[in-house]
Image (tube, rainbow, N blue to C red):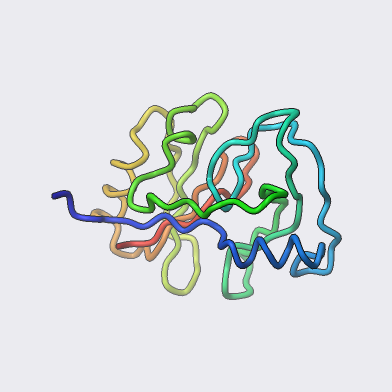
Length: 161
């Protein structure tokens, strides 16, 4: 049995439900509904959108608990309809992992004080192996953020298991 070495943390169903219901994000901006023109992914299910089919919601999100210089607020998308949270949390989402052309990834490590401590482009590496390697070799990294390496948008958080 393989030891669980990390945990994927998508946006929660509760957070998404609040955005859908209120139609306002945490910064008072109106949540915008639109037909998907890109693949996303949805930050709850961590599955790509179906272009020109899925309805998605656009809103502002800051993926940090502490207000500081690394907040990096940005636009995110979730499915307009309720979806299940990504459940296989001990492996990186296969639909994202297998599509390096549409999902070029960067892993950014932060310490407990939420200061950036490490960054690495995934490139052709296996993202699951790279996550384990970073956590093994970089004790100062408390958690990682996965971002699109081209658009710089936040995808999900990864915690040590």
